[in-house]
Length: 454
Image (cartoon, rainbow, N blue to C red; front, side, top):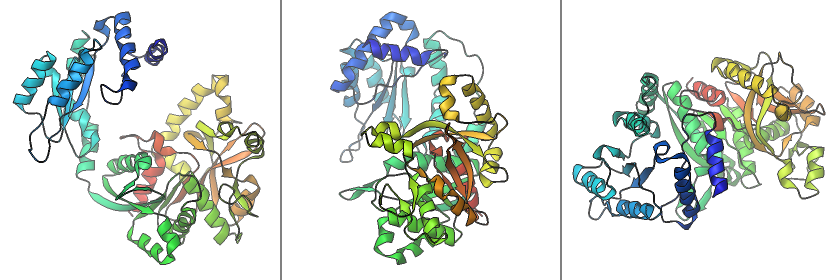
């Protein structure tokens, strides 16, 4: 309990507010330590410095078409057993909360009617701040803390972006080629949710709707004729992943995008497999592969580094991952550099890098770094790298490595690839989808959607 409270306090350092989510469903055994910790924290800081917001779901059973408040009443009762009484209740449902049910909840929870807030299903999650603003939730929350607003928030730009999502001027179709987990009649693509949202962010900034179709890469392995389906899409993405399942299908998809001038974005594994495909078809290294899939390949264009291999031999797998933010130095006159400049991310990251340079504990993230270099920060989560031994032959055959990270042993790890003469053939070893936001889209997704429009 003390550890939970310490984590909350640490998260709140130098901030006016800290928002803590206790996930799951009230009544779950796993919630109990967190509820105890919050009640204890309330005693420590005083109730005037802490507010409870219950987010509850009101089901509407299809056979009776009546909104039921009983689950919400149950949640309120279970919370009260821990000495916690919600100050606000946000009611999720398919339809807006009506007056009789709002009154029921108000009486049962013993809170003001204006603190019971309806939040029905909507077309895009980014509309929620606008809905809560209509309910004056921010003002009500500040009043709960006896705080006066410092300024009037401006929502014009946000409203414009939401309008672009709801009613885009143009529409494009994008194929995301990956491997998906089948459960009965359903396929799960939740692991690619951040990619979905990044496309939405880029589309909003470009007033373009993005229709996504999830294609199982194994279908291309079954028959190469299926590859022709990819001509029906404005762009192709091969996302991150691992393992050998569907790998050859992903390589075929990357090659198809390269050969047919279809905009392509390779994310992490998508970069690696695009390099494998390029090495096989353009560099004539027929056996080229990643050692993750084929450890005995004669051309390991994607491989772990020697220092990593020593750690792997000791079964210390966690120590071989490149995790978190790393600096990538960008080459002049590349498409990647242009995208970072166009979206304003180059200047934004330059400030962050200056901050990191002040703290020696972050030096490994920057590597060997010249102050005058054009560099950016992206988050990583991978083990395998482009093999430095094959960089020269790949470059001689036309592939451009537009960014790299330099380790302290002077080994350059390739971060980005692009193909001159192609409308948009770009790969990134990092995961730019993790830093994409509405109003501040990832440069890679912005460029991808922009080129899919042409």
